[in-house]
Amino acid sequence: MSNSSSISHFLLLALADTRQLQLLHFCLFLGISLAAFLGNGLIISAVACGHHLHTPMFFFLLNLALSDLGTICTTVLKAMHNCLWDTRTISYAGCAAQVFLIFFFLATDYFLLTIMCYDRYVSICTPLHYGTLLSSRACAHMAAAAWASGFLNALMHTANTFSLPLCHGNALGQFFCEIPQILKLSCSKSYLREFGLIAVSVCLVFGCFVFIVFSYVQIFRAVLRIPSEQGRHKAFSTCLPHLAVVSLFLSTAAFAHLKPPSMSSPSLDLALSVLYSVVPPALNPLIYSLRNQELKAAVWTLMTGWFPEH
Image (cartoon, rainbow, N blue to C red; front, side):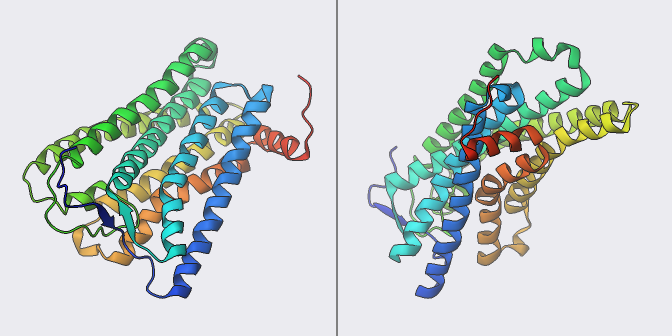
């Protein structure tokens, strides 16, 4: 990356001005990260150890939990370090790594949520073909495609962003390294290349969004045709957690990046960045476990140290 060699580090946005508020932010981030580690860790352990959970839905949920843990580790741990040690700096290489990892995990999250929507669509709309369309090999290929797509997207954006010359200082208006904040420091018109990559990514995101909407329209039509109320309730209960997670992820990310400039302010931008990068990974385990009796039972047996024989 042939960026300006004069920049050895970046200055992240200070979360607070006083020492007391810095420690308060540290405690808040600590609580969020512990909740995320506990929730996602329990899901990973329960799915890995519970043989009755070795189904496509829980396989993709395990992958989502791994991606959520990566997101939390990338964003929150550095913010906690800065709050605790009263610093704002992040090295040039550390900033590049953070940009790559955040983009990688968030993109993978979105692709996994799209695949999980397909899983629900096949399960409800074409249940007789579920075993064929979502075989073990097919699930492994789809999960690998999600991770590989996230990796390639992150690699292209990171390499392009950090190849730009920077001449507008090194202060970022965010508590973690983010591509739009780094582009503001660029003094080259070659940043148009990044906008081109962003346009491609937006098309990909929009395509996934259209697929999710279309799938849920078909799912709701199929559910409403189920004659028994109990059957309809059971079908809806398997979709609601996924729909809630998708809505939380898309609404916060879209508002953070698509809000009009007149609404922009440091405090609002900070709150929105926390909402889309920190809150969903911490809440996803809770959302999924509240409505899923199998998962709750598996987590309970895991916590009590008893595993049923199957």
